[in-house]
Each structure stands twice: as C-alpha cells, then as structure tokens.
Length: 270
Length: 227
Picture 1 (cartoon, each protein chain N blue to C red):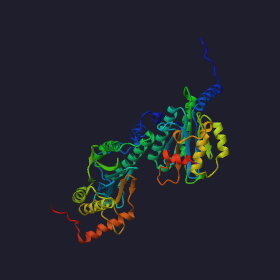
Picture 2 (cartoon, chains in turn orange, blue):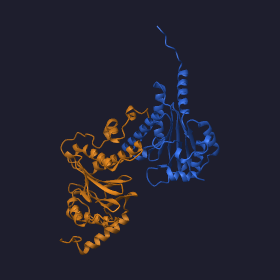
Picture 3 (cartoon, rainbow over the protein chains, first blue to last red):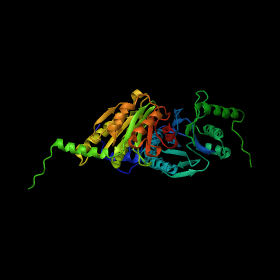
Picture 4 (tube, chains in turn purple, brown):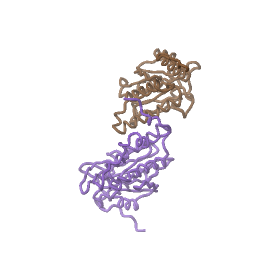
C-alpha cells in the first residue's frame, strides 16, 4: 500500500459520504449508472413504527417482490443505525440496503472522528440528505422511503421522509410502503400512546397482519416456515432486536384471536 | 554567486530524526499493553476532550504521542481509510496490519520529502479472538514499524517505562492489575496517576458488540485504581 493520498488529510470533514464523494464516488449508492428509462428490481414493502412508554418500536414484514413475483420471503427491512436509533426501509431493496449500510457508517464515522454521537435531529437530517441524493434513481422507479426512529432525552421519536429528502417528525405512529395505508388504518383504531413494550409489539403484528390481508406485496405471518415480522425496539438500554422466539409467540396470539374474529378486534363506534 | 551548503544525506536524516525525537520526548507518555481480555491503552492526559487514544474500527484502536495537530490528522486519516475499506469490501477486511502499513508509508514519505518530519509516534493495536492473535504495532516518526509483543510504550519517559514494563508485565494480567501498573509507571516521579489525569480505554474481546473499543473513566476507573 502506498502513502495515503491528500484527500485523507483534509481538515474538518466528519461526514463519510462527503469523503466518499471526493475519494471514491463509484461506491456511493447514488453513483450515476447512466441507464435510461425505468427498470424492475425487488421491492420491499410495509414498515411501521410507533412510540410506546419508554421507547420506540419498528416492525416490517419480510417479503420482497419483483412485479407479481415474490423475490424473497425472509428479507429484513429493519436495521440498527447506531446504539440508539434504527431505520426501516420500503422501496427498491438493493438500493435501500446500500443506503442503510452507508447511513450506519456515516453515523459511526462521525462518532469516531468527533468523539461524540450526532443528535437525533442531526441523524435524521443526514438521512434526509442521503435520500435526496437518490432522487435520480427514484425517478427511474428505484425510490427508497425510510422511517427513522430513535431514543433521545427519555423518549422515543420517529421521522418519515419523502423522495425529495423532506423530513417530517411523526407523532405516535407511522407506516410506509405499499401496505402502509392498511397498517395505518389499523393503528389508527388500536394505537394508544401508553402502550407498554408487549402491547406495542402486538399492535404492530396486528397492523402488519391487516396489511398483508389487503396488499399482496406485504408478507403475512408464515406459520409453516416460521417466518414472522422483524421487530426492533430502542429504549434507554439501546437498540434491541426482538428474538424470533418472542415474536413467534406473540404472532401466534394474533393468529389465535383471528380464528374467531378474522377482521381483528372491533373498535367502539363512539 | 553564493554556493549553497552541501549537507550529506546521512547528516540530513540525522538532523531530522533528532528534531522529531526532541519533539516527542517533550510530551507525556502512553502505554499500550495486553491483559487477559484484550488490550489496554493508558495515557497521562488531564484533558477530557483532546484524546490521545481513539477507536479506529471494530477491533482496532489507536494511540499517539507528540504534536496534537499532527497525530490528530493521522488519526482522522486512519478512520477514513478503515471506514472506506470496510464499506467497499467488508468489515472483516479491515486489519490493524493494513492500517499500520498505510501509516508507515505516510510517515516515511513525510520524513524524507516534507520540510519537517511529523513529531509523532503511534500505536495501532488490534484485538484478536484470543490473546495469541492480539497485535500491537508501534510506528515511529520515520515510518519504521515494530511488531511489539505484550506491551509498547511511547513518549517522554519511554526508556524508563519500557524497562519497568519488561520487569513487571506478565501474560494474563487482569484489567485491574494492568490499569494499576500503567498508572504507576506513567506517574513514576510523583506516585501513581489518579483518574482525573489518566485517559484509559480498552479493546475488550469479551464485548458482545462488534465494536470492541470502549473508554473507561469516572467511577469505573476510580474503582479499578483503588486497591
């Protein structure tokens, strides 16, 4: 290996993405491929997030679709972004996973260089920039839409984004992806801000169940293969992925209740 | 017409080396040593904000003595290299040896080509799955690399501290023993250093997280220092 080139010694940059743009732009996810028209690639679908007492939860179904086909039945769409935040991504799966990877390095890079972590708003703004830089790909049909959630100052917060990099803080709960309308409808009737951890997981599984019933691109609870939604929470103790064992147990409760009430619990009229 | 002085290459290199050595000898010392669960970094450093010890990557740490602005620029360059490699290839492809090589080339080039050499000494250490696989690389101002076994010391009182480390260090020390040894040697003249003038960090192979680096300070450090 030769001596490090001058770009490594530039002063003041603590953004990994900016460094990549000067030193190695070809590995950036938004690198111009120069393709014309639109193309089909696997898409990930429904992600939901909600705050609960003492934390924030994020859950996603496990299906990726390619047109009318199922591209993958056990894909993960919820990831830790650092110790106190997580990110879930709907949209073009390949680019989404690359953006998540870049975002994870971006946060770690900043923390190592500056000696302290970014604020939660700072993290959300960095993510907005990454999404905005993908606008060209989005216009070719390869959009990526994340939800970002984190724990700061004693409570959980969540943010949604649009393809132009717009960043919106959401209160209570939010969902993105093709099944999100149905999941949001369910959460609208079932969500309470004073959920404890287990209630939040149950509400999330119920909402994803409804989304899977109405949207063919959202995967349901797969009892035969034991594939259940990926659920993560962030609390004062940091990021935690709920074990498959625990998710399976709660998912079986949902399925048992749907056996007698296929549409799920009925909300009171007034 | 005045004829410029001829300075032979031996003399030139010797002058530069003397210059760098003097700069480094003015600074306080840093000790890096193996203990049973990994690698300990300890520096005499009253500042809580300006670090001499830092995280590079999952299993790799960095320590430096000398001029702050010079080793800070090297530290940042190392983090950039590690993150670039880990991102373009895989996290497993970032190695302490690779970083040490890049630093060696850079220090060597600066030593011969630039008007003045860097007045720094660095340690790049990587914790392995077992203590046999731990690596400690010590780099000097001219780009030489030493593959150290067990421990390395740099800075002002390096000869004295290295001598005592040879005597006192042994395989399989506990964290408490290692911290106390480091604080005693760093504080040699005025007794052991206390937690407010000691910067301590470890690469702990028993940590579950992929990032093995963690700082030890405050009450935890205080309790490690108490007998």
